[in-house]
Length: 510
Ligand code: 3UK
Image (tube, rainbow, N blue to C red; front, side):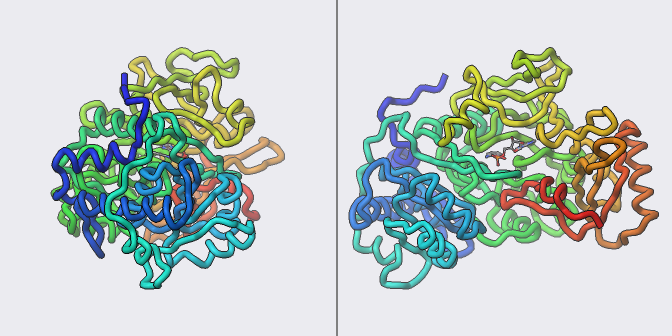
């Protein structure tokens, strides 16, 4: 059981606490531009917290939208909002004014902290919503920049006296389909995620160097690249430019030990890995979408590392099913991590016996609290959170992913999970990436359709399409083979790296 005091400020518990324990001179955050120790980070955080509660006029409980690419200043701003007793509303850097307006309105935002490079869409959104509260920009030399404001503030701030169950984060789901959902999290939830997955599964330590791709605006990144390292006195590397090559180079340059990214990135990095010294890397965590077995194998063969898969969700704040080391069972996501319970529910809402596919349900120290009450009723039943995923559990308590419940294809009466067909296709040497969807068909209701991105050196042709179909028939039950194959240059993805199958479903047929 996790126990936290009733009065709890998570930022103070993470940062002030570590400095008090003697971590002040240890590195906290690295980037190619600058590196800060724990003491330096604390001072920045305190100056920003003063700015929020002083000149910017905010009170405890006010909401602060944060926008920027990953950087040390982004990390300082996030912690400052929490330490000031305000509510952090992180947003993805690529969002446009329209989406930012939705966040401003839905989360009732009182103030904005934003990277100067991203001011344009931010100002449009403030205009569109007639936002009254202030916006301050960082990363410029301007006299009205956040950095200039920080210089005028005291260097030490006493953390706001918040309750363990005060809301401190409003996270928007990345939303693979429609409108993003706003989810609320407490101060104690922030510590709870640090004390579950990283401790039980990753076994993190002070000497670790965390690195990866997810934006701090995505709770996968917020946890993995900021909260988890701070909790154990480790260092995080925050990168603002990310390609498979740049991430590999950064792992080498910073001697990173734990990497957080999505399956596609591992797939793209694997063939390039040989060119870099990755000897420092001990753990590779994959989340965000299902890990294809072909990707697990490719990465193992090129680096010798077994990927640690884990399913997490914005509603749950972070990962709740995973397995590492000897515990890994390729193809399965893993077991409920200590602190969490998981089961598979049938259509009647009752747990199914092992082996049967149904709705994944999970329970633990963190869990769904939606801004919107209707959602709460739809996704939370008797304390169980429904994630919208179809899973089956085996006799040993391992959970095997099938699909998002809305990505199950029904073709001529057969139930087909899109990711299973994708897994089969990805074992073919010509396939770089692929996506499988149900395509309307008069005779069968739906047919399986595959969108395929080819590896360099392979050209699209009717022959190759036939070869891919044959390959699937040889790999999985033949009725699952894609009756239609279309070649694409790239797949549509969200900023968190998730495939957008709905975009493909609505694509005009060629
Ligand atoms: C899917 C996975 C299979 C699944 C997230 C780690 O992805 C995160 O949060 P989102 O709210 O999406 C949640 C949904 O994504 N998914 C995530 N990981 C896996 N499916 N295998 C996986 N390993 O559909 C889930 O319901 O964007 C991931 C930590 C924090 C997060 N917010």
